[in-house]
Amino acid sequence: MPIAQDPLSVEVTLPREDVALLTVEGYLDVDTATEFQHHLANQLHHGRRHFLLDLSAVPFMDSSGMNIILRVYQEARELPGSVHIIRPASAVRRILDITGVSITVPVSESVEEALARVDGEPGRTGQEPDPAESRGE
Image (cartoon, rainbow, N blue to C red; front, side, top):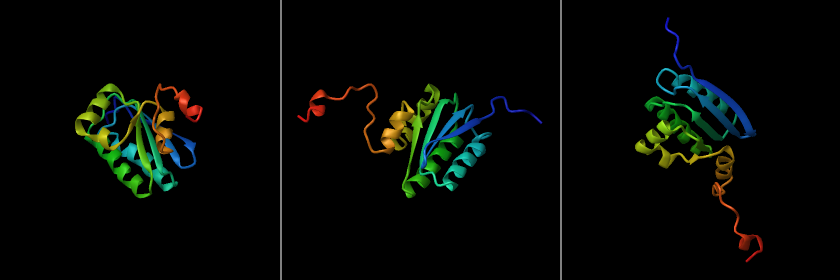
């Protein structure tokens, strides 16, 4: 029995009661997609409505991974909830952009930016607040 060259690792943390942060490491493809789906389904089962998917350590993702992301996106929207992709590796970002997935599922550069989007705030990566706003002008 062959051993997978790049097994998938998924670490789940809970920044908030209804928010699951899934930090994914390894190839997200037809061989590992079921494991990824299992982690997402488990979090849905436990009442999580918002999913932050850190894909910074995913060097490759095929259509199996994209389909799972789109499926959980649809399920989360019905709750209502949300899905956010965080820091995708450049090859994965290219696939997300080419397929249009990044138009549907928001991409953030940090967990903080994604949480701000969950809260309905605009992501302000690297922007300083306007001093006139803080003075009430």
